[in-house]
Length: 165
Image 1 (cartoon, rainbow, N blue to C red):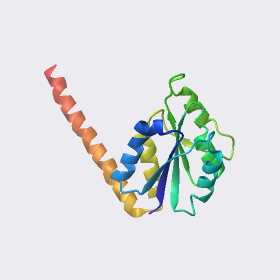
Image 2: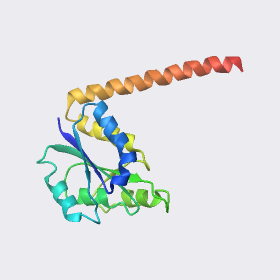
Image 3: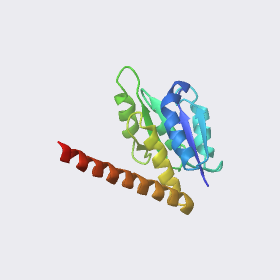
Image 4: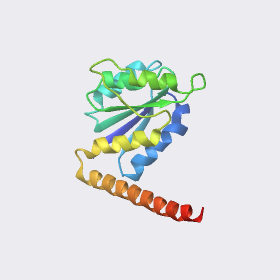
């Protein structure tokens, strides 16, 4: 199975990013977590991205706040899929990171999840890896089926509640 990488611009992003790691762990996806900044350690970011495929990775998650150039820096240096995880910062509540993530130049695409939506970054990484991994695809199908059943059960309970109103 290919690995996922979770790269965060600062260790202060860990409380948010942890949810992506938990999703990957739930599905049995091997992953590495690193702290590398597009601005403070750009050579290391580029080197990591350039060698990611050879090092067994199949998808990269770049989590950063403020200018949030990390995902773009990763995408500029790899042909692997990159997921941007914009992280909320104090000044603009994460809008700056979101806009930095979605406004990429042509030819350097970055998939972007919502601000602080680390779980969705993990789920998207699982889906990407499942394209070429039937076992992982089966696990994800089971997960989706369980979500479906839970939703139907919630609706059933709601119908009973409505009768009581």
